[in-house]
Length: 135
Image (tube, rainbow, N blue to C red; front, side, top):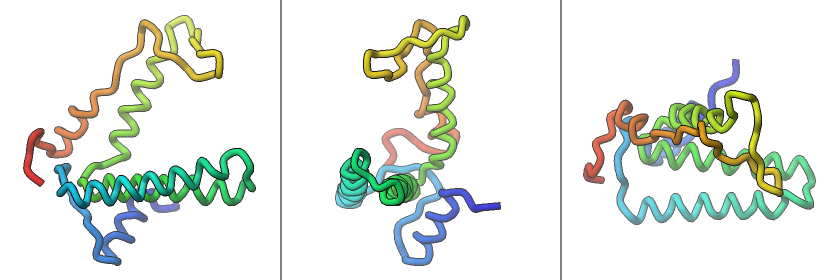
């Protein structure tokens, strides 16, 4: 079985002496800004090849986005898998009980009347996050 992205990124962070928290917490502004820059850089690279490809480069850039996102979550001590599960739960509530899907003209799935927003704060609190806690 392949290790999860979270496990792989944790291994990288520990091997290279990078920040890795086990409990959610705010981080110093400099570190937060650095992680934001890394995310923006990877997202821009993925967007650049999304239309023109080639597909192998797009797959590489998408994986880099995920890798850096998991690293950023790790720096903040966030179990991103649990947050993704909560986002998925909310996204699935966009599907009405009648199975109908509301879409925007470009195909984006819209929130219907049965949509239940994600409660990411609750997920983080279960992970040990104390809102307003120090960096």
